[in-house]
Amino acid sequence: MIDEVTEADAEAIAALYNPYVLNSRVTFEIDPVSTAGMAQRILSITPSYPWIAWREGGRLLGYAYLARFRSRAAYDHVAESSVYLLPDATGRGIGTALYRKLIELAPGYGISRMIGVIALPNEESERFHATLGFRRAGVLEGVGCKFGELIDTAYWQLCLDTPGGRCDG
Image (cartoon, rainbow, N blue to C red; front, side, top):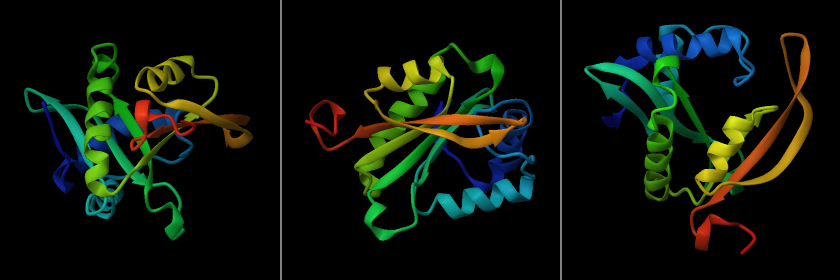
């Protein structure tokens, strides 16, 4: 059910992602991503980070990936995590399975810290990250602006090289 994403998945991923762009605050992108644009993202991310998908009957129901957190070399051990599902795939444990797989794969890519960035309010996403061992590391106020409103973001952190995944011991 879980396998690696390839460039051939760009159309399905763009189709899954773009409703989030157009209709929600969970991503701060404003414009839909073309198939070619998504293919370029896949090609730029997958050499360095995992990008995985959940498929059933040949249909891509969701995907998750890690990506560079910041461009400075001191952050090379840190990755930002993302997961997106089709609406009919939610509530079935698919997002949890995809995230658990990312957590499992991350050390093989040299990642010891994962960061989830959550547009607030989003109690469901915060519960999801807490369940997986992430802890809330901070909030940035009004850093996003979408649909004419300022949006806070919470940063959730998981340390993969410490007991219990906590960074504070």
